[in-house]
Amino acid sequence: MVDDFSKEYAEKLRTPEEAVNVIRSGQWVDYTSTLGKPVLLDRALAKRKDELRDVKIRGNLIDGPIETVECDPDQEHFIYHSWHCSAYERKLCDRGLCYYIPMVFSNNAAYYEYFLTVNVVMVSVSPMDRHGYFNFSVNTGVAAPITRMADIVIVEVNEHMPKVHGGYDECIHISNVDYIVEGHHDPFNYGDREHTTEVDRKIAGHILPYLVDGATLQLGVGSMPNALGKLIAKSDLHDLGMHTELCSDAFLSLYKAGKLTNTRKNIDKGKGVFGCAIGSADLFDWLEDNHGIAAYPLEYVNRPSIIAQIDNMVSINSCVAVDLYGQVAAESSGSRQISGTGGQLDFLVGASASKGGKAFICMSSTYNDKDGVPHSRVVPLFNGDIITSPRSQVYFIVTEYGIINLEGRSTWERAEAIISIAHPDFRDELIKEAEKMKIWRKSNKR
Image 1 (cartoon, rainbow, N blue to C red):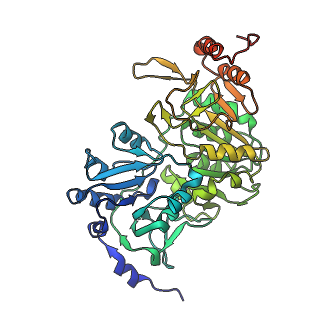
Image 2 (cartoon, rainbow, N blue to C red):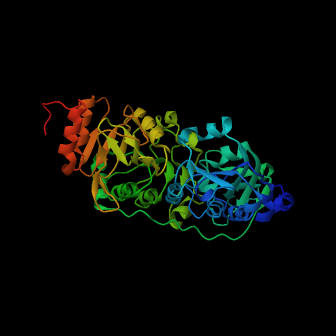
Image 3 (cartoon, one colour):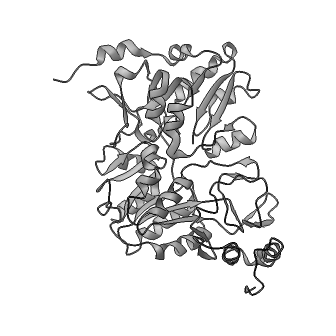
């Protein structure tokens, strides 16, 4: 006989306005991540603006608008923080309305367990099942460790959240919930926002020959991973696996093409593993009640020692720029925050330690400024940019002009290799800078 949780549910049910009354000035409030954003509760909390001061809010990869931020441009009442910026949160940073929290994703749970205060967590979940569980859905990567540390837990039931199967911590039981909020939500509309370019296709084409049957993939955010997914879908590769912090439509493309089976994985055999997911309605439909998929907290998905256990693990991420020493800036342009450290370093270390594993960092060779003037993404030496991945950990770097391997390379070998994949218009200038830095051999080919 299954317990009836209807009475407890009714006792904990509140309107959004009633639920946010527990929040006090000076407290820390967590919105968790991505689709875990509590839309109704955020709106209700914004209405309390004049009653509150210095309420500090944390989120991650959250789409806009965030009402508590938008209603208080002077930040007297609400102060917002993100540990990985979405495009919307990046714009908030540009406006001085968001503060970045440096965080390596594999340490996410430990940060909350040992160092961070969570007075109230407000998180969207799927409707409760007959056993009393609310599913964290595509927010499983981060939600449970935060709710465990919170003084007060408020769940916002979102009728559109897919129920996903998990390895662990994909659900929260009603007995661990303080308040429940219901209400209407608009359907998710996260279609393919990344437009694949010819440069993306060339970069993907350089990577494809390095992939083998049975490889397990981690694909980062952006148009290039989507381009690679489409290329793989048309290739002769088969029996590929998924072990990725972010699940996107690229993996759905691989599944539809019959390439994604997860049958050769050393761990989680037969299951595609992910932490969070952002994509189309078709992607969420694929994840719903799919026994071939397992959502895990990022402390598992991104742990280098876990990643290293998977043979032929392939990590593919992007960056903003690379200097001639092989340092990688993937989260900022100068002091401007663009995204976050995320899991790039986790997967660099883990994939490099995998038997047959490879880690690729990709970028276009140039970008245009607001006036249309092209600039090289290969620079002599960073000066103010945040280093996401140190030169000692960087493996393959790829542009539309080629692919290089920096593992074990000296400073002059690195400079020569990196310049070889820079845009030809900037190579002579980069060579001159390398000579000044004494990392260019006179015998090097120009």
